[in-house]
Amino acid sequence: MQLLKKRILQDGKCFEGGILKVDSFINHQMDPQLMKAIGVEFVRRFAGTKVNKIMTIEASGIAPAIMTGYLLNLPVVFAKKKSPKTIENALSTTVHSFTKDRDYEVVISSDFLTPDDKILFVDDFLAYGNAALGIIDLVKQAGAELVGMGFIIEKEFQNGRKRIEEQGIRVESLAIIEDLSHCQIRIKE
Ligand code: 5GP
Image 1 (cartoon, rainbow, N blue to C red):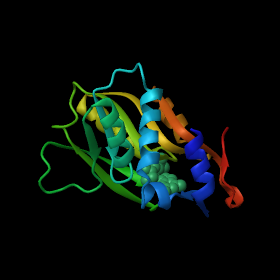
Image 2 (image 1 turned 90 degrees about the horizontal axis):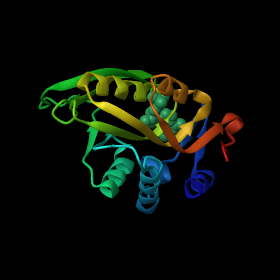
Image 3 (image 1 turned 60 degrees about the horizontal axis):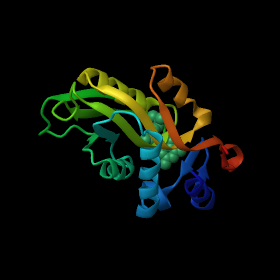
Image 4 (image 1 turned 60 degrees about the vertical axis):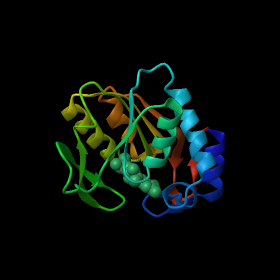
């Protein structure tokens, strides 16, 4: 997706340890026009797959997920990183965050993730794939079907894609970062 790649090269900042900061248009401030274009691209890539619900994880997955859900006229559900006291019929799994270097609990109510659901999962980043594997676990626990996972940015050198594809799940990423070493952002053509 050329528009996205251009924006990453223009406004993305590289941090030590293989972290890409895109706070000016995805993770803190958001660009709705770019988010809409991201939604359109996810719809295009997953055209022909049977989906009845978009799923994401809070917080930064919500914007691309709502755009995709809006365009497809489908409901959007997000997994939570803190279990609210009021949650009913909670399913939960543990995920390791490499950016925060800690484990956290991810929860979703089985009221909104059911055996009838054919899920397209959308998120901001694919790095090592830990969050994605947690989502795969939640979808399995619910007895739902995961038809694909779409990411705005994939950091190829952290190999998350392999771990997801090993589970037989299709992965689509709109911009693939090949390398961030020496704080140079190298994007796949
Ligand atoms: P994973 O579980 O695939 O290792 O990492 C996925 C999550 O970690 C993403 O949802 C994102 O929130 C965060 N993350 C991983 N790498 C980066 C990065 O380079 N930049 C930012 N902003 N977030 C990242």
